[in-house]
Length: 237
Ligand code: URA
Image (cartoon, rainbow, N blue to C red; front, side, top):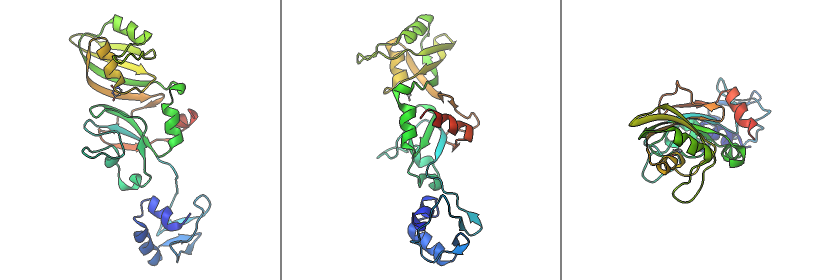
């Protein structure tokens, strides 16, 4: 791999910026000053430094975001801000994308990566990865709803959902619930409640499998997965 491509991918600016860095003799490979920004390097083996900093090359990034409402789970959008717009340039360089979608008004756990294989595994219906949501529901959620969700709900388009676990946290004219589904159909939680005559008024994803939203992340912020979270995600492969 060319050193200018590698450094550019790692957030050291455009190839032109990297060329300037090389010209200023700030870049070394195995302690030898780089003179040609097209020099080939092996990111796994070579000791690459910019000034005093060792450049640790990672082909993939894995971020946990606390998605705020009002942004789209997509890489770009003509009208709205996307979750990728919320990332610092050093992460955007990896060309990451969200793993699955949360609706514009939904908050909570969103995994963002550039590892297509991992995304595929996490989303595969075959893997049965449970996604747990907290929701406020306009209407009284009842034990019959719990049974209906456990049996699978018939949506308005004729699709019968897989069994879902519904837990009533508080019931009343506005109820609070947690629900775990293993699929990711469009607007699935909202449509499941519509199917039993109720309306979701607030929705937040709490977890995907064993990956739980870090409660210390404020809305709109993110962090890299820690090693335990990452090995869980990779174990699904
Ligand atoms: N179900 C929904 O209805 N919306 C989401 O954003 C996620 C699950």
